[in-house]
Length: 222
Ligand SMILES: O=C(O)CCC(=O)C(=O)O
Ligand SMILES: [Fe+2]
Figure 1 (cartoon, rainbow, N blue to C red):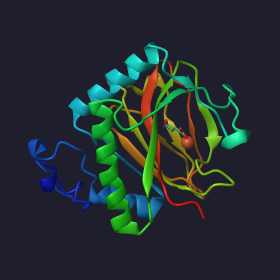
Figure 2: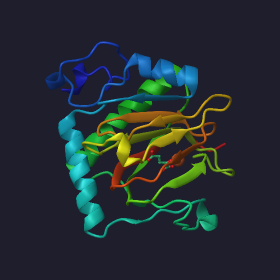
Figure 3: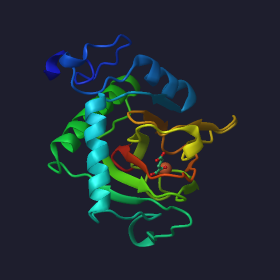
Figure 4: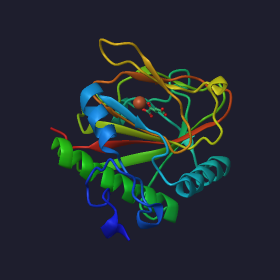
């Protein structure tokens, strides 16, 4: 029943809501505060574990059935595929792809409302894709906002890796300007948010397949 879910109403809360009353993720007030103060934030166990497990199974199945394509770097006619720079394979989500994907998109609509409510960012939509980094694949240091298109404002990645350990590698390494780098582990259910224009980051290679949903909240390009 979404009417009792604070996130669905675009309200950030600091107290947990009983799971049966809120089938979607709850963005904590502390997460939004951290994003405002540091330009990034992460929230472990953001999604109910059942939805995370469904998304992980779907990501695995679609990767195995040949639906994924090598990801590129750049935009429009400048887009190229260079596996040494970026080694993941991806599938963009569309509404109606599956009940789990639709539920996830609905949760992220709530996150967008919460971000707009708190920061007046004018975010209009959310684009997201499944990603699978095979062992050894990574993504070199980069910014998510394109040089000639400022639509991407906030990056959001949800990880889908059950039983991940430090020894598996595959951290998201953030490079906040002026401070030490930070490694975020791609544990199942963890959501990481960061500012697309200002936060250089990279994906370190891993020893096992690394699954995620990577996405971007967008404004109208100026
Ligand atoms: O998977 C991650 O941790 C980050 C992915 C990323 O940087 C991207 O897709 O632009
Ligand atoms: Fe990125």
